[in-house]
Image (tube, rainbow, N blue to C red; front, side, top):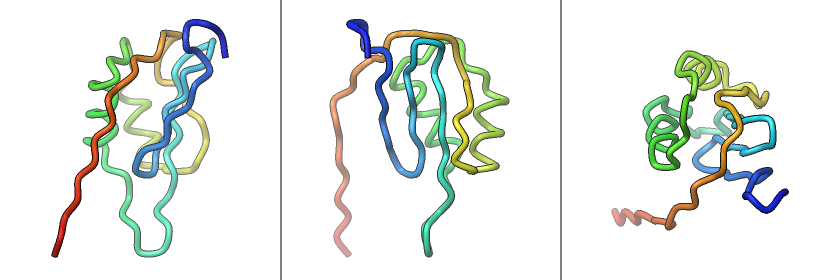
Length: 92
């Protein structure tokens, strides 16, 4: 990882964003057990909140639909924007 924050990973709800020196990669994991598939809207929301610039929405959609754990380059190199963490608790 260099001083600009490149080469960092973030895992969230069955997908991961990797900010590497050569671009931003999306890895989508298949559901485990009775888990739900990753929703395209969740990934797009995360990309918007992380302010990922110039991402290819067709490649994002392909990665989400295939959910094959293969890194897909979705945008050119850029610095990762850090977010404050949030948590939602639902009590039934």
